Structures are given as structure tokens and as C-alpha cells.
Amino acid sequence: MNLPRTRSRRAVQAAFSLFQLRASGAIRVLAAALALGAIGFSLGLVVQSQASDQPAPSAALADLQERAGDLIVYSEFGERADTIWAADPNEPAGRVFLATVEHAPGFGITPSLSPDGARVAYTVLSNGATGYGAELWVLETGSGATTRLAQAVDLLATPVWSRTSDAVVARRSGEGEATAGAELLRVDLRGSVTSLASATGGLYAIDFSPDGQSLYYARLSESGSDLMRVSASGGAPERVARLSDGFARDWHLSADGASLAFLAESASGGAAYSTQVLDIASGVARSLVSDEAQFNPVWDGSGALTVGQSAGAARRLSFAGHLRRARR
Image (tube, one colour):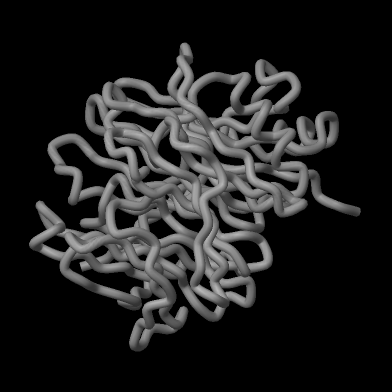
């Protein structure tokens, strides 16, 4: 099974956002996801395994893939538990249950699908915990088994998978990260932890370089937003480029690693954001779309961008990724 990867704020505060897809045919999947409804905005360490009390989804999932081909994987918000599904994007009612994840009332999980499609990493807030005391779990898509990899991570920081699907980057920060600081942690599937970056202010993991050797991340401070890079094994980070003198968000690296699409506060102010594309080699960014309400520019397999615009919806879903049929 092959799956490339592509946040959920408190559900009652959900805005609309799309998750990056690193797959050919992303536009088709994107359109199907929109048809399902809103995409939720996002999205001591001990390894603890837990078997699901639901039937293993492997047989039903394989059967659906055989009939439908490419699938989408998403989580559906519930007041006290989210449900993770795989579905045919052309017939979303034909979906397969993958797992139910209980959480604190009113808070949803923040999921991310591994590049190989074998696992979904997610952060979840248990009853009685705060937003900075979430846990990092991994779900096996075939068996439904779950493993806790880390504690005391940030709920709203989307987990970022390594290119080889053997590790996840999660964020840890204190209350009021602008003064308490934040840290990016690389956690492998055995629970081994490496600190990749730390700073006073906001840190947001973006993606690994195509060769998997470096992690790109955004560093936000009172002076603005910068694109940073650090070795996947840790070390001294380097500043790649200035993204904005204000707030930037919704960063997505292109498949070839040459460009970064993101949103920056528009010159007109207010809540409007402008889609920007940074050429990483030169450090020069250009604006693609005129000022208006925009969100999460998504690369497709041809290197083109789809830019979301705010719209109403009846359901809150948090998109995890795109599942491709195994190639024989």
C-alpha cells in the first residue's frame, strides 16, 4: 500500500484549510475532499502500544482499494472522539473505518499520513490536559493498532513525517510560546527522541527535503517570519530566507524541493492573506494571487498550485492524506 502525506483547532473555532498532498492526481483528490465538506484547520517519553477493540480494517481497506483505486484518508470530528476513515473520493459514502480516537471534549486530533501509507500520526488531547500537554500517537492503517510515541507535545502542530516514514517531527512548547519558546523533536517509531531546533517564539515544522537529509521549518517572532533549515540528525540550523515582516502560515514545499508556497499577511492588513511562492535557491518570493481571503496553497503532481478560499460547509473534517492503490 502506498500513501503520500499530506490540523484541528478546537472544533468550535474551526476555520477551513486544506492539507498538502504529495501525490500525483492531487487536484482530483482535492476536489473530492471539498465535496465532502470543510477541511478542519488546522491539524519523559514512553512508547505505549494499544490494540484497537474494533475489527482490523486491513481486509475491508484492501477490498476498497481494489475496487476504487486511490482513496482519501481523513478524520471526522466528534465532541469526545474523532473517527479516522479511508474513502473512495468519488463515492465518499463508501468508506472504511480505521480507528476511533477519544479526546478531551471539544478538541479534535491533528493527523498526518506517512509517505508509505502504513501509518497515521496524530496529536491528541486527553481529558484534563491542556493544549501544550497533548500526546503523539501512531495508528497502523492495516491493523488499527496504535502506539504512543511521546507526551507533552503541542496539539495544534501537525506531525511531519520523514521521507522514509520511520520518524515524525512534533513540536513542544510552553504556555505562551512567544516568551517560553518552542522545540522541534524528531521521534522515531521506537520512541527515540532528537531535538532538532529550539527558539524563543514560534517554530513550525514544514517538510523534509526530497533527499530526507534536512528539515525545513518556519521561525516566527515579533520581527517577522523566516524559513529555516536543519540537518535531519540535528545540528546548527541555518536561515534560508525571509518570508514576511509579519505573520506567515500554511507552508508547503514543492515535490522537487525547489519552491515553498505559503501565505503572508497582505499589505492591506486585516484578516486577508496573500499566496507567495519562494524560490529557495535565490531566496526571492513572489505574490501569485491578489489580496483576498485565501488559505493553504496546495501543490499538485505537475507543480501547479491550488489556492483555497473560505466557504461554508456542513461537516468538520481534518484531512490526513491521499491513499494510492498498491502498484503491481
